[in-house]
Amino acid sequence: MSNENQENSRKTLILGSSGFLGSYFTRYPNTLGLPRSNWSGIPVSELSSSTSFEMLENLVVKAKPEVIINCIALTSINQCEREPVLANFVNSDLPSFVAKITASMKISFVHFSTDAVFDGQKSPYGEMDSPSPISHYGKTKLQGENNVIRNNPEALVLRTNFFGFSFRRPSLFNFFHQNLKLSRNCDGYSDVIFSPLYVKDVCNATFTLLEKSQNGLFHVVGSESLTKFEFVRRIASSMKISEKMVTEAKRPSNGDNNVRSYDLRLDNTKMKMIFQPKYSLTDGIIDSLYEASEE
Image (cartoon, rainbow, N blue to C red; front, side, top):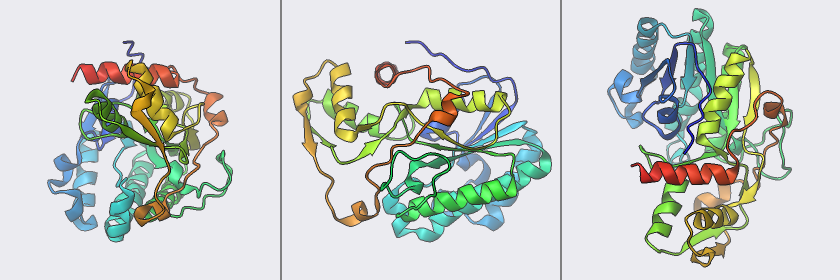
């Protein structure tokens, strides 16, 4: 499959390069991957600002990047509810610190946020709509956004929801692909709506926005919105598997589902004025299947 990558001419440090999104960024030229374990030496559950911030700043000084892209996040809604202090540190305090050092060192900074900063009551959401998160995950990501913009007004903050095959950690696509491959029925929620963008286009959009010297808030999402049920059916169809293997379901109203937003369609008009995705939703799924076959 095509691997159409936007060119990247500046030395770029990827924070969280061992994760799903970060590992795709490291495929681009002039990128330096910095897994969290390389600068802290300890798991995320044991991170503390007094040790990790100093280590990180020293590594940034040594690496001398022109751009830093922060892909580090605690994305599990369950874990964020169970460990709010850790979620605050990873999703809010850490990007706040990186924003400060990038501003002081004149380094371009990109920080990723999420569609979960909205409550799902008035979609599609544009960049000017007021956030109203209902989960602790969404609240910490919103605080991270605000901290980044306050500490580095020239930073790029990209709200996204992406998909693709992950070589490092399980993704939603990996889960459905593996189960369909093993001829297992899959439940797809018909009451959860999102605007997924293929992970390679998230990277392409990021480098295009940097090249165009953009800053501020952008919704980096797909133009096609659909339910999780429709998304899984699209994967099955691309795999030449009967869509009957996908069962329509409703998300249970218990546990962490009570703090999940259901309709998180985002408006990407602002992004498309500068960047046009290279992959349609179907093309992204097909390319994800190719990536999975190469594992």
